[in-house]
Image (cartoon, rainbow, N blue to C red; front, side, top):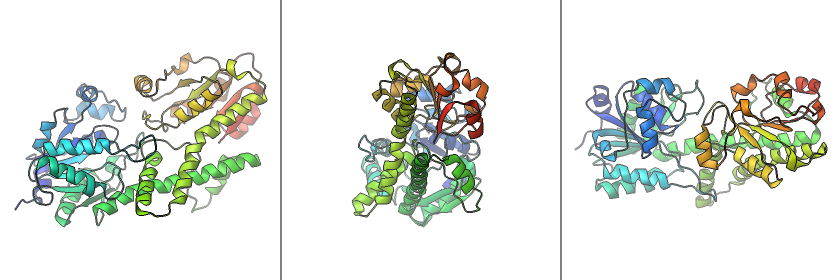
Length: 443
């Protein structure tokens, strides 16, 4: 009978190793934090990424200093997984073009693990999935490729990632970790192991399905709340009242939720709701609120582009000759992550009006943007003078741009009332904008 209850102690005493499969925005921070306490193997199929980590270069720009001194053994050799007794899987789970869940990378990772699984190992998945995927899709793949029986030769668990890219406060170790296992023995050991690195503590879910559902529902709840604020923003625009002032007033009450309108992209909120919708469809459950929320949030990039176009038409500009600058292409502020960025939808909508915007970003990697979207970023200091500026992402670097400097970024011949500013994130004070005489709109 294999004893799975000594893995934590053996990790701490360096008798056994922990492995991370997938070293992106989620996997790398987990690996770096665990490596402070135990021996860690960091596996990824991307050779360029692994080479960068070997050189101390963090392609995610999240852990530059920590990466230089980490003891992680980075590798693209899957056979190194045989040395691990605790494997954490943190590969992306995106959606397809039709918004159905895409589990390809998760299935591929499960095959690799199965082909290199040692007896007595616990495998924990962190990738976002709908309830049931870990036990009905991942587990059978590992069993088939390893020829080892789950529950006897190895065990499985699930602990949804909660890392917030670009957030230096809510880090892996400071966020309470949801953990679960296929039985009491595995769940208890998984909890003990995560408690090594997660100083905020852990919440033990009663089952793997419950843990899978927690992640989906907490992000879907945010999606619904943001959708409501986007709906309110559209109503406020029709009323010609300022949404930001409304939100500021609401937040004076103790039980205000503090949600803001905006474009909802990224690899969590903009994706997880589709996984929950897929589950609801399979269960034949009504999910109309969630579906309508998704539709609302998906509409916002088009809505903002249309507002910009109408503002330009009002001042009788030939849109084919105007210069539109877009500040920001990442999915959120102070983060280099460009996955599922809704700024791309904004750009594409403007192109339907024969507007070719010039894009800059204070955080994104130019090469990544070029490869992912075919867009060449322009350094901020090299931007041409504009007819219209759209502030799409509230990077801290943009918050320091004064009104005086902003006005000088428009074409010299334009009077202030013909300088169009679309301040999606309300970076500028409304009173200051009104005093400047600029033609502005805030979401």
